[in-house]
Amino acid sequence: MNNKRERDNRPWIIAGITVTVFAISLAFAIVQRMSNEAVAVLAGAFCGVAASIPTSLLIVWTTTRERYRRQQQPPAYPPIIVQTPPALTDRAGWPRTTVEHVPTREFQVVGDE
Image: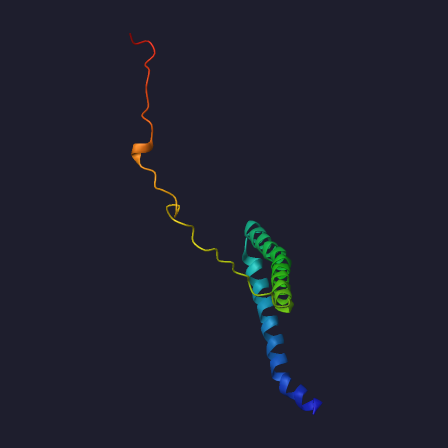
């Protein structure tokens, strides 16, 4: 049974090796015709992408770990809602204040004779 799996994978392995060799040969042929400055730009771009891969993997690992932690937490207690009764309006039982009860104000202008 193991031999059958190996025989089924052989075309894929051969195709993968062929594509890899072709890509390397094509890259070598293109780099040979490029100027030194262009090769330096490509090398810098490659190094930038290569440097960002570990950071991206770290971010993905951290976010998936947080999701896994949240799934394992026990369910929280249901929220307790306390509803207070509405406030009494117009101080029920007390007499209403009117403008008549407010004493009149007296003004004295300083400096006026």
